[in-house]
Image (tube, rainbow, N blue to C red; front, side, top):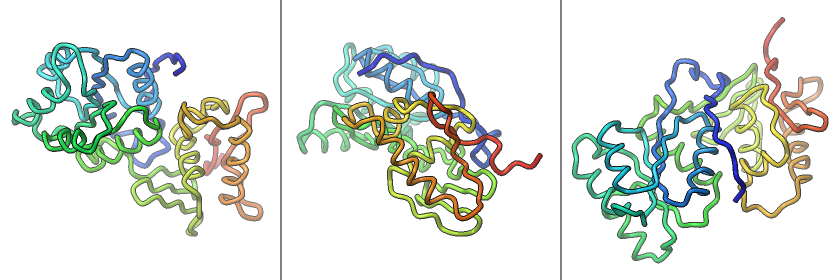
Length: 254
């Protein structure tokens, strides 16, 4: 895992209603410092507000002070176990419906059943794909707090529907593969921000992906071909020597 500095960026206003929707707050309870930092970096890049603690007893204190919108909870923690924290959350009225994703190195079916039976909403086994975990976070928030997650990103005549995994441009369906969809989604979330190929590999493919950075160029080419017909403007901007961005002027009139 690479060291990454956390940021306090908030989601751009490419999403419909994003300017007025408050950012969801997520509590990460993970005692592995590198993994905790990685999760915070990726969640903040998605526009969420992140709190981090490394001990179960610290999590108990934090949860008694402020109830977040979602908890990412490691199974094995010093102080109080993640399993016990989840059980206590479900026993309290104020946190009974709080979405919980459990992280664990335990992959056996019996352990997964145990985690879900005490009230976890989802269960992710380490090592995991970061993009997949981000998708699970958004899916849980859409069900529990739909006001905190923008379901549709739009710019000009281009619209990306996260919930139904569909893209439209000028009234027509744009057929994208899963990777091109995630790539477009990531770029549209922060119009104007330039992402290097390495950053896109981390965010779209996951840090564990053993693929060449030139793969990004191939998928950007496919995305451009699918999005634009004839003389239609290309919404993806290439920044020589730096990477790619979603053109912040796309769909705007002078």
